[in-house]
Image (cartoon, rainbow, N blue to C red; front, side, top):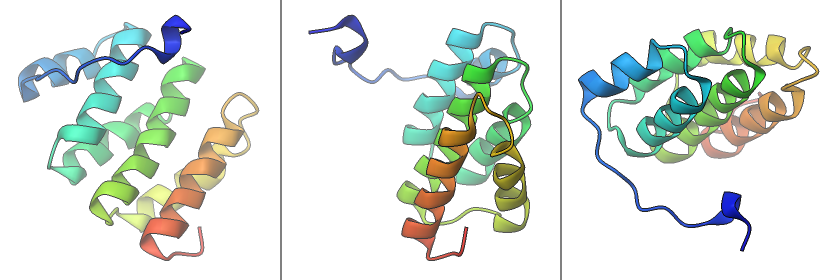
Length: 117
């Protein structure tokens, strides 16, 4: 099985550790932490704030993961601040490096929240 498809047990992470990583500069750590909090942290608004900030990150992988995690939040919680999220994701569709991930996130929002995207 390819290494990228190997199952990994979820880990626990304190909010303080997550904050530190998400404010840091290690793109790989940021991406892993953002996915973890999107899937496991019950405070969707807190996670959304980090996603929105990271949509403007210099690293395209971080931007793409931030968009994907907004889709996860829509699926898991069924709520987002659409007045803030949708315009930023629509704008991100202009970014050729992450266009597909922004479109996927908008599709997830539409599917799980019943919006126009």
